[in-house]
Image (cartoon, rainbow, N blue to C red; front, side):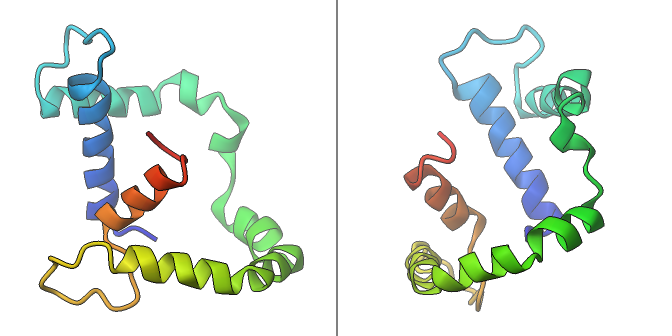
Length: 121
């Protein structure tokens, strides 16, 4: 999973892309990254997002009942070679990084994976 600072960095990048760099009409209060970040956080807290049923899951119940289920394990095991190949490809995407990240993706690598697979962007 993402570390806390990586999550905050992802929210800041999302805010910048949504309010500062997009071709959508700018919100009158979004003039810089700070105000864009504040607007994004306000939207996250708003009833629009929190009214969605998936926003009200209990993490441990989700993990124990859905994520760590036998069907999920069987599916992931059947796709292990493909998942490993994807991971290895995107792990090496940022070759200019000086510090070794071991078995982790950088935030940039994860974003590239999400963009390439059309999950975002």
